Length: 378
Image (tube, rainbow, N blue to C red; front, top):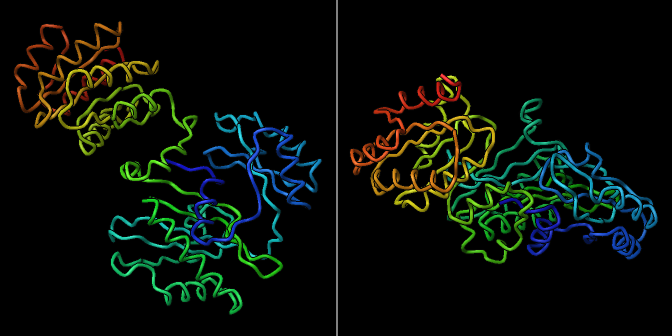
């Protein structure tokens, strides 16, 4: 789950990270009032959960409150990569002298948090990694020890900060790390962290991505979810506890288990198809959940065939088969389907599908090859 810039920066501020003076507005008139309170130049920033807001015209500098109102009028309602701007952030403009990238992520290989720093701030870190990898500093953090003071000081030196800035920087790194840990985030990022002409450090942009698996511990953060970010199908899947991500292919996939789902998508591509989705119904799924999942898949007009790949451990193959037939009673479709059922009650599951004239396969490769052929009308 992604948080908006203003939400992320408020969390950073709660942990001692300095952010610009500012507030959000949903109307041009509100933007003017906020700009008047701040005084002087302000930045009007669209709040949508996509990158490239500046290039799309969603971030503009205003010299005074009048211009802030006019720019807010232009930006509110703007479409940026398919998302409508409903809120703008009015921030005090900073006198920027230097830009730094600072972020915390989980390094799955090291199995610990890692702080990433770069003197090339203001640029997407992926772009820096491609063009100037030597400018990126990686700082692994011990799970038990946490971030040590000397680590933060060494990072400040490596980023080229002067002595007058080091104490400020240490406080910011520690605050960012606390925000990352306390929210169970998978990413906490300041880009850029700027050195102002007044010699202060300021987080002028921020981003937090939360781990969905930990949201049950943070009901206050779950309330911050922007449902505009999700497609209707993704929203429905979340409500019924199905892991679903919409893709652009033509083969709808229903699988039980994330790893098996990834393998199914890989095999589908191997046989020349493109997955239309990632969908994991999880272990122990009953017929009602299978029905809901199939309805979500068939809601995608791009889907030309559906591939079921079920390993019956906790999940029973006959329950999945019943769910498929129940869904087809509720959703009329001409989309062809093929199923690979292996494990608990697989023979009964295959019998149920055979009686409904839905083909089955004994292996994943065979099932994927059939699904691709069906999608092509073969």
